[in-house]
Length: 54
Image 1 (tube, rainbow, N blue to C red):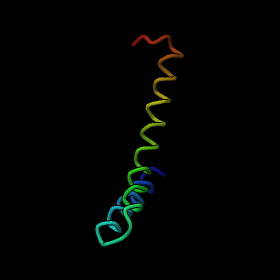
Image 2 (image 1 turned 60 degrees about the vertical axis):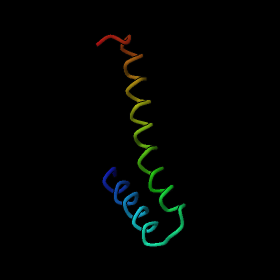
Image 3 (image 1 turned 45 degrees about the horizontal axis):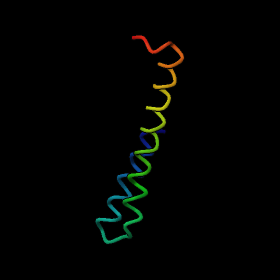
Image 4 (image 1 turned 135 degrees about the horizontal axis):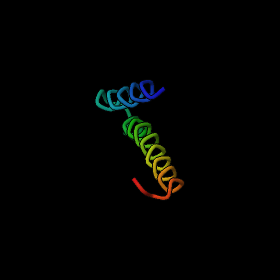
């Protein structure tokens, strides 16, 4: 699934560079940032559940 999101993000940036709307580049960036944010949130929740120790 992640590979597909990266492909969509790259496609959005390519559309923008080819003269498309700036929204394509924004959507491409959003497609990358949202899964990264979810991953960070999940890691923080797991660390909090373990007591924060390493």
